[in-house]
Structures are given as structure tokens and as C-alpha cells.
Amino acid sequence: MESEIIKIRDFSAGYGQNFVLKNINLSFEKNKVTAIMGPSGCGKSTLIRCINRMHELNLDAIHKGDILFNGKSVFETNPILLRKKIGMVFQRPNPFPTMSIYDNVIAGYRLNGIKLSKKEFDLIVEDSLKKAFLWEEVKDNLHKKGTFLSGGQQQRLCIARAMAVNPDVLLLDEPTSALDPKATAMIEELIVELKKTVTIILVTHNRTQAARVSDFTVFLYLGELIEYGSTETIFTTPKNPKTEEYLIGKFG
Amino acid sequence: MLRDRFFKFGLKLAGGLIALLIFSIFVSLVIASIPSIKEFGLSFVFGKEWNPVEEHFSALPFIIGTLLTSVLALAISLPFSLAIAFFSGEFSKKGLISSLIAYATDLLAGIPSVIYGFWGLFFLVPLIRKLELSFNIPPYGVGIFTASLVLSIMIIPYASSMARDVIALVPSDLKEAGFALGSTRLEVIKKVIFPYSVSGIFAGLLLAFGRAIGETMAVTMVIGNANRIPHSLFEPANTLASVIANEFTEATSDIHLSSLIYLGLILFIITFFINYIGNMIIERMSVNGRS
Image (spheres, rainbow over the protein chains, first blue to last red):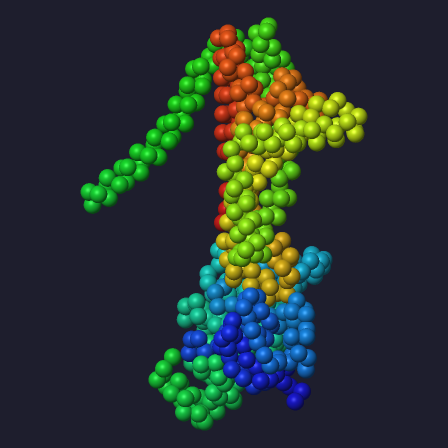
């Protein structure tokens, strides 16, 4: 199917001798939000870190099977190029403390030594910050350091930084777990807005968050894919009893 | 409660004692150099002549000798210290090679300076002499350059171990943010790790520089002990510390002795100012220093 931007095929991954993820088969639809939920330690983060090959930064990382991005195996793609197409936002807001807000947004360009004119950079900064709902709050302080922002603002700055390089896919690794409810609500609103331009894969251990923002939901348990389907189906009529137990809060 | 108060008092006492000690060293240096200060005044600092026979003393040749050897030593050691720091702080934090390197650099700091001096005298000096012959300059062998070479090896552990520690402390989520934006390792090192740790790296260099300025024994053995302003890096010279070590035992007149202590006072003040300015720079460079 044309609309499936990422396909995961018979994929297992882990550390050392230990597979955390076991034989996952899964596809992600273009311009949709797919939530990956499950209790801590079920392999959610490992799974999305494999998609942009961040998992390999661990020296003892192992994997087998394949992940296809636009039909091509990510493991045959240069990770540097791959990560420019698949952006990532982390659990803890991590703007670069040595850079201003402005430089943080264009960090993807600065880090990779891409030089554009001041005007082009200005446009990218404004556009990305608007996309991240942050422009109005910071437009007068663009050259101050990003570390003085609140946690929620910092996280939106990280989203702006990821969006500035025009990725096709945005991986969000529990982006609101360190934020207060108000900041969380704002990020959730932002996620729904962003899917117009990018495909979003959202890892969360917050069941209601998955219900609020996602089109599709994946339920992982102990490294295995338990159920996958439209969010509505999963939350109203789950097929697997394990999913139902998780949703009503029997564990995790 | 009472024990807490005692503990706090003890800490205060220890800290206060250190401050008092430094202050009293300064005062005793000033007192002991009063005869020389009376005789030569401030022109001591800028005068070019040091002549114990005619009892005419001034410090400029040694100030120049000190700064020249230290700056040169720092410049020579810089690439090595940084390479060691980035290798063992970022590329290979664990493993046989990195622990070997860490052990070897720490060992460098533990070698007595007289050994460095001997090594310089019997190994480096003949080598430099050959080099000078091939350049057609007077083959002293000893001199500023030789002293800087010895110093540069001696100060590597000070700069590299501090830099290694701050580089290893760069939060991994910042590095991950860099990688996730499609950066190579070199780009992450240059644009994420280096800016984050630059103040600590600079602090290490400052420590190394301070060590180079004050190093006495090894420098005295290979610098050639000439009491004049050097005109080239291959000429014999003296540093503040080396001239004190060299002439202290043979200073018979009071004014000679007092002038040597005056040199010590100048060395003390230079060290103080370099530390002060250095700390200001570190403050400004540190991650949370500026907005």
C-alpha cells in the first residue's frame, strides 16, 4: 500500500544476548498519528529508536529482521541521511544549553554545516516555531538561551528543532512524561496539528493520551505486539483480553 | 545539633587557615624583599639587567623567560592533551586501551621533576644540539625551546585529565539530540560536546599553565641559566623559578638574596593574576554563565 511509510518486518531487537523486542510486524500510515503504548520495559522506546537507528548507538545493540522506510531498508540507508528524514523528540526536553533559541531551531543545519543566508534561516526559525506553537511566546527573545524556558516550552522548542529540517516522520518518545498537565495538553494539540505535514509515531505509557491524539494504536507487552488497529477499535472493542486488561488498568 | 555546629566550625577553620596561610606567605615575601624594593623600586620589574657581581638586579629577563617557556609548552601540549581527553572521555570510555592511556597519563604526573630534568639533559639536549647544528645556529642544546619541550610533557596530565572528566560528563541526551538531527560523531563533538565542556577544558589548561609557570627543577636543568633577555627560542635563558633555585645557595649579599625573594613575589603575583583572569573567563564560558 502506498500510504504505508514505514513497515516493520519480523523484527527483533535488544542488548547483548537479550532480545527486548520479539518478532514485530507492523506498518505505519502516512500522515497519521500512531501511538505505541504499553507498560514500562515493554520495548516501546527500543522499537522507535530502531526506526531511526539510534538503537545502534549502544555498543551492545542487536537486531534481526528489517524495517522499511519508503520501501527501502533503513539498515541499508546511511544513518546520517536517515535521521534527517526521521526526526526525534525525547522524553526529557533537551535543547542545547550552549545555543540560543534561534540557534537551537536551526541546530540541524548548524550541526551539519549547512550554510544558508540569514534571511532563509530567519524564515525557517519563524516557520518552525509557529509550527511548534512557540513563536508568540519567544519571538522577542530569539537570541536568549533556550534553557530559561519552561519545561513545556523547551519541549516545543525541541519539536521545532526536529521540524526545522523538514522530516517525513517524527518520532516522539514519551514527549510529555516530564511535563505538567497544561503543557501536556498543548503538546497533544500540537501533535494533532503536525500530522498534516509529518507522520507521527508517539510512544506513551499514558493510555488516555493515546486515545486523545492517535489514529492508530499499537499495544506492546513484554516485547511482543499484542494488538494493532485503529485507536477507536482498540479502545472500544479490543480483540485481545490482554489489551482490555491493560486499558482498564489491571496492570502497568 | 551541637555536632553539626562543631563540624561547620571545623570546616570554616580549615578554609580560613588556607586563606590565612596564603596571605601570610604573601606578607613574608613582601617583608623579605623590602631591601630590594627600597633599592630598585618598580624599575626592578622592567629593568633588563641581572648582575650579581655588580649587585644590579632586575626581573624582566626572567618574566619573559617564564612566560615564553610556559606559553610555548602549553601550545605544544595542547593537541596531545585534547586528543587524549576526547579519546578517553568520549570515544572509548572503557576498555583496555583507554585505561592504559589513563594510567600512563596519570603516571606522567607522578614522575619527579628531577627525573624529567635528567631525561631532558641526557636525551633531549643532544638531540636539540644536532637540530641546531643543522640549522646553523649556536648549538647550545639547552634553552627556552628545550625547557618548553620538557614542560609540555610534564603538564599533559593536568590538562587532559580535567578535560577528560568534563567531556565524559556531557549529558548523553544532548549527544543523542545531536545524533537524532543527523549529525556525524565529529559534528556532535565539535558543536555539542565541545561548547558544553569548553569552560572545563579551559580550566584544565589553566591548571597546566600554572604548573608550567611554577615548575622549577626540570626547567633549571635544561634552560641554560643565562641571565639575559633571550633573542631566540634556542638561546639559554632563565625563568623566575629557575633563577631562584639556581642562585639561592650562592647569594651571599643581602641585596642579592632580597632580590631573589622579590622575584618570588613577582612569580606569586603573576600566578595570582593568571588564576584570577582565568577564573573570570571560565565563568563567562560556562554553560549557565551568560544569557
